[in-house]
Image (cartoon, rainbow, N blue to C red; front, side, top):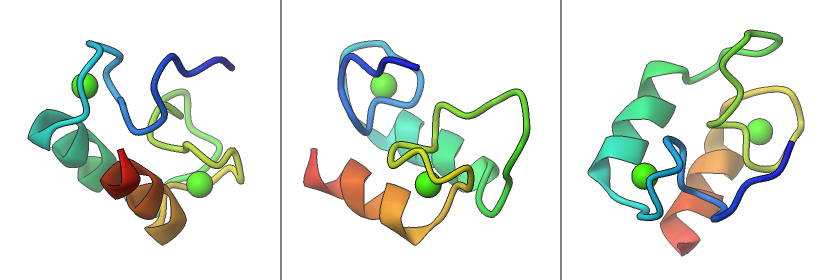
Length: 56
Ligand SMILES: [Ca+2]
Ligand SMILES: [Ca+2]
């Protein structure tokens, strides 16, 4: 899976609160069809993904 911008969960080109909400709504999930919040590709949406989002 290719992410144009790490941290851009909905791929609109901007890392903002909308992406933060998307990540939060999928917090702790893994193996789901929605994996755009999994920026470090460890299969789970969690703190490391949040850190990557914050960094951008
Ligand atoms: Ca976005
Ligand atoms: Ca992850």
